[in-house]
Structure formats: C-alpha cells, structure tokens
Image 1 (spheres, rainbow, N blue to C red):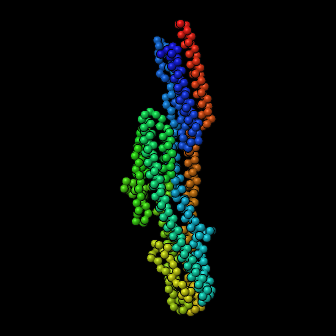
Image 2 (cartoon, one colour):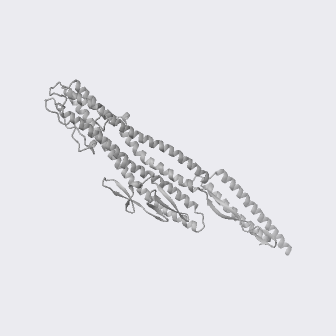
Image 3 (cartoon, helix red, strand yellow):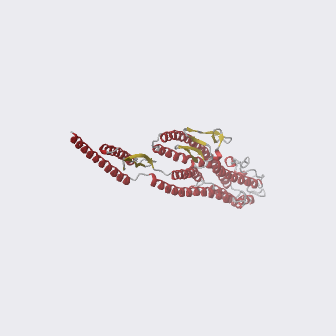
Amino acid sequence: MGGLSGSLNIVLQSLLTDQGAIETTSNNIANVNTPGYSRQRPDLEETPPIQIGGLTFGTGVQLKQVVSLRDSILDLRVNQETQLQGQLEGFLGPAQQIQSLFNETAGTGLQTNITAFFNSLSQLSTNPSNLNTRQAVLSAAQNLATSFNQTSINLSNLQNSVNLSVTQSVSQINTLTTQIAAVNTQVSTAATAGNNPGPFIDQRQQLLNQLSSLVGISEINAGNGSLTITTANGAPLVVAGQSFGLTTQTNASGFQNILSQGSDITSQITGGQLAGQLQIRDQEIPSIQNSLDTLAFNLSSAINTQHQAGFDLNGNAGGNLFTPTNGVAGAANQISVAITDPKLVAASGDGTAGDNSNANALLALQNQNIISGQKPLDFYSNLVFKIGNDVSNAQSNQRAGSQVLTQIQNLQGGVSNVDINEESANLVRFQNAYEASARVVTVINTLLETTIGMVQ
C-alpha cells in the first residue's frame, strides 16, 4: 500500500482512532463524580508497517483497547478494611445502647439504687422501731429489685433486636450476592468477546464493597475476569454466575443461627456488620447479663441470710427480705421483695424492738466481699468499667481503621479517580490530532483532484 490512497487510508484510520480517544476522554469527564467509576485510558499502538521495495512505510495508528485503570491489590485492601469497619459498626451501635443502660450520670444505672438501699439500712439502724424508716427500707429494696428487673429486660430486648438485625443482614447479603453473580457473568462475557469489562468490574467492586461491610469475604480469581466469592472461612457465596444464599434457623435459645448449604457457620462468621452483631448477641450481652444475674443473686442471698438471723418488730425470727431466685441464671429478672409489712423487717439481733444490731449487720454487707470476692459496689463498678472500656476500645479501633481506610482509598483514587485537568488536557491533545488528520485529508483530496486533472 502506497501513494495517495495509502496515505488517505492512514489518515482515515487516524481520524477513527482519535475519535475513539475523544469518546473515551469524554466518558471520563462525564463520570468524574460517579461513585466507583475507574477512569479509562485509550491505548494507541502503531499498526504493522509495510515494505515496498527497499523502503518500509508506516501504516498509521489504531486504538488497540480501552483499559479501565485500577489496582486490584488496593481494591482488595479496601474490602478488607471495610470488613473491619463494618464489624466495629455492627458492634458499636448496640454496645452504646448497653452503655446507656448503665449511665450513672444520667441516673439509669444500679449504683444509685444500691447506695440508696444501704442508706435506708443506715437510717434504720438509728431508729429501728420507726415504721416510716422501716417502710423506707422496703421502698428502697423495691426500687433496687425494679432496677434489676428493668435492666435485665432491656438487655433481653436489645438482644432480640440485634437478633432481628442478624436476619436482616443475611437477607441483604443474599441480595448482594445475587447481583454480584449477575455482574460476574457480564464481566466474563465482555472479556471473552474482547471488549472492555471495566464498567462491569466497577459495578462489581461497588457491590463487593457493600458486601464487605456486611460480612467477611475472600475473593478468588477464577479466570476470564470472573471472581469466586466465599466467606472468610470458605462457605461459597458466588461462583461464576451462580449465587449461594445463606439461610437462618432458630436455635435452642430462640436466636437465629446462620447456615450455608445446610451447615451451621454462625461461629465462623468474621468481619462485617454480621460478625459485630453476632459478637454483641452471643458474647457481650450474655456476659453482661450473667454479671448482672450474679450481682442480683449473691446480693439478695447475702441479705436474706443476714435478715433471717435477726428478729422483726413482733419479736419473730426474720424471713426473706427478697424472694429467693432459682439460681444465678435469670436472677436479675426474677428478683423481687418478699414482704410488704414494714413490721417484718428484721432490724433486731436479740428480739427487742429497740435493738439495731441486725440492721447494722445488714448495713455491713456493703463492705463485705459477697459478690465473687468483691464488695457489691466494687463488682458493679467493674461491670460498668468493662462496658465502657469495650465501647471505648471499639471507638478507638474504628477511628484508627477509618484513617487507614481513608489512606487506602486515597491511594486507590490516585490510580482510578478522574483528574478533570488531566482529562481536559487529553481532550485538547486528541482534538488537535483529529483536526490535524482532517487537514491531511483536505491536502490529500486536493492532491488527488490535481492528479486526476492532470490525467484528463
């Protein structure tokens, strides 16, 4: 190929190539604010030259491919950090609600009522035969029991609420894996046909980010642009164009276990909101509830034992001040005051109406190690501290993880984000090339007309 016709073919190919480059650049500019969009780069390459006689002539340029710019390692790191952030978010929301149940400054904790109960015993010791002082003891005991009851109920309600969130998270995971499977097919189809699968990969990456915030996942390159997605412990979620939904099943405690193809994987869930929700539901709340029950059981048992050692205003042996509970489990929910008659409060140690020795003995319990080797308020304070510490640690980890995630996203943006100034410069560059090629067409057309005219 040579001569003016060959030159015309070269310049026409150049026009088509520059047009494709302009379209790619225009698409980048149009999507500068599109979340998850990866900028595209037109790859130009010289077409194979030809040899005529002893001379080699170039044959022009062609648009080899349009490549979406991304760093798969950074994409993976974003997903990993998103899993950690999702887990902390799933934990923190309910954990902060738990903390509000033990907010002493807002008057929602147990410390005020525990202190008020022992203060009422202190008042009783100064005037053991006064019915109003005795009634104050019963009122303080009732307030303490009600506080235990309400806190226990609130913890159970929160646990049930988190259990509902677990079910909702599983439903969202299934929706996302179905969408990812569909996009997976589109990526493979585009790659097989030699087309740019970038837009579909962008969609898939956005969906993977959302999935990572819900559950810990692993990604396996299955070839031809396809990904196999599993949970962090290997339960399949997406294989090529097929998704594998998770299911839930009620366990003996009335909560939802998570199943993959019939196998219980609840204990294997790591990362994402689902892991944080399971941590709150199955570990944090049961631990706090057990501590609350331990406090209620041991405190009421110690008080009952000492109360039975005294005598009431009628001179009879004291009975139970609190109704005995059925063991530690559920004690905070079951605790209640056993008597309503203030005369039955056993303040006396010798059976005389004015004696206060048993009232003093009951008061002394506040400074005795009757709760797992600790004083009542010390045990409760340690519980409150643990709750606050768990929330504080989660918040610190969330802030640190957020900074790491932001740094990785910035690195990712340096690769994939559209720079409007760069794209504007590229647009001018390709426009100039297109206009130059168009001028060459005009020149060749003039030369052809001149040549034809010479022949005529």
